[in-house]
Image 1 (cartoon, one colour):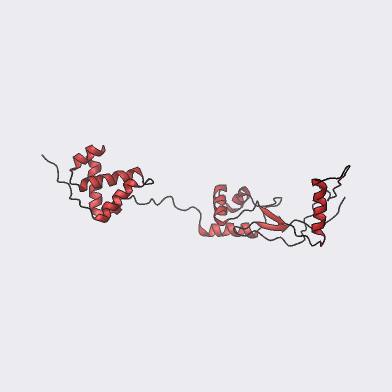
Image 2: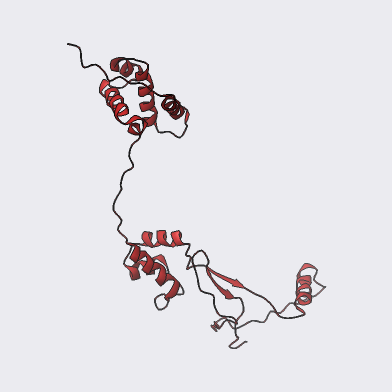
Length: 213
């Protein structure tokens, strides 16, 4: 006994153009390309069995996408996006983490926030902290420094010093004088500019000297 008559399928010029475009599109998924081939073949009046044999699929597959296209047209061939897992971190938690990163000092003994220390303080995973920092352009581990000399003879002195290295005189001797390394002289000559989204913290290169050797 013959099966049910397949649903009549006719294409508009736009639909035919879109389906053929999917066949040529390199980034189109194989599933979408197969569905386009099925619909184009069915539109030529071929029965489901013939289309299934030509494309190497089951008749049930051909029947499914023929029916889906007749009911929903092109939209019926495209998979609906999946909803995915529900969010585990709220907007309030994100706001709190960003505010803490920008305005609160890290735990005692740390020079800056790390993903580990922030994860412990905020009750999140390190990967979550890293994703939020990337989204807001926060980089607590980076500090930029700058140096602007007010010495009117600065250029002349630099030329003299560089000249010693580029073309040293015979028997030249260079002595370097600096702070004792054990002394932590952290009072910068200008206030530290705090970190902000996409901009790291900034501080002057020089500082108030608390003793030299």
